[in-house]
Length: 178
Image 1 (cartoon, one colour):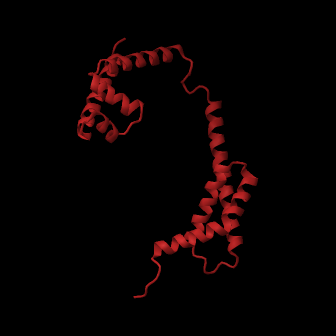
Image 2 (image 1 turned 120 degrees about the horizontal axis):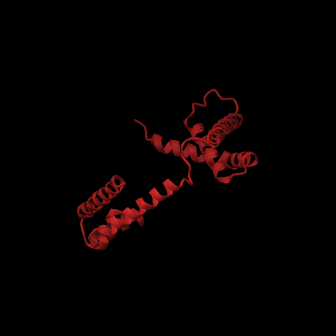
Image 3 (image 1 turned 135 degrees about the vertical axis):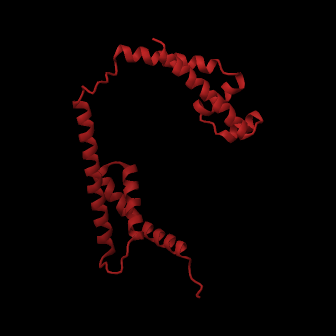
């Protein structure tokens, strides 16, 4: 058994080489056509990954192959964008979907739901309320909350479950009242 480069390391070396060789040209190619740097980066990365995964033993010109992949990806993107636009146009044209954003009944129902949510949160025990707000509204992780309040993650989970049960019960009770 020989001492060679592991397969994953070999793939990384190959990807690095492809990146150095083709990335600038691909970015330029995509930017001229899309005028969106983020899309150009994404598509260039897709081309490089496809090149790294392909069997290129019978390819005469790697550069031609790279730009054939790039052209195909542009066509696929244009097709997806066109379908997305057609779908959005269809939704806009079908204004009679039964949902009126400015329907006064929907606005009142939404306000009532928000009021019920606020009441449910206000009625929680202080620690449970604080943990719920940190987790759901402030997007603080459970381990960070546990550390801040000197609790275990299991205790944080218990407070979160208790808060969710109370909120759900309040919202269900609100929706059942006329």
